Image: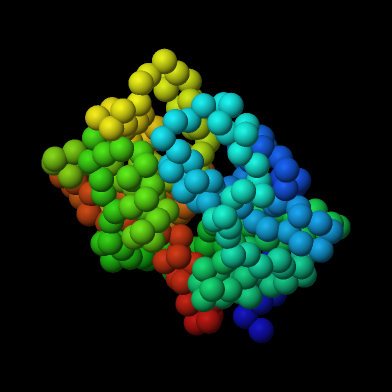
Length: 278
């Protein structure tokens, strides 16, 4: 039995309980509840036997299609109208961590843990802390050897709706906003977008949204960008990602240009490889 097979998933849960919503609840209420619980998902209850999972990605895709964002518009939209739902798998508290990681990597599912009838999220940053089990090995891994050179970059003048659609089409859960010198200006994730909806609605009040005047990505992007550097060790990067509660991180060269990304999937794969080699 490996180290990860000996650790139960319930041992690392931080307690982010997933909001349970009736199928008739409004879209704006779902967003408020997700923000309140600091989660990235909500569960829609259709009856006692049927539940569906809606994520910030699902919400972002739906919201990006709306030409006009107003509180009353989101109040009128009900949960049962949402078509973009997530694949998920429910794990018991006694499930081992290796099983959870394997399912995430193979099936690209959202892992949920059920404890006494309540559902909790398993967030990537909570799993990153497992690196301490192989702290010596992690100390020897340099970022420039581990980083992924596949980067999804957009310019700051791009509209929010087209950016979200491009993220979905290309399979990224973020967009890195850069200038002409390839330096990071901001970053947008599905979570950032959904969490900023109320601010975006206020900004759009009184604005006549036409084809020539669409909300730009720099309205909602998070800045300054939390970054790492090629010369750092992976152990330093992981500590930063855990501390700042993020699941991917841009890496900069010594000239300040974006040269790579650290992705949660790559970290999970590394943890599994270290576990199997130990």
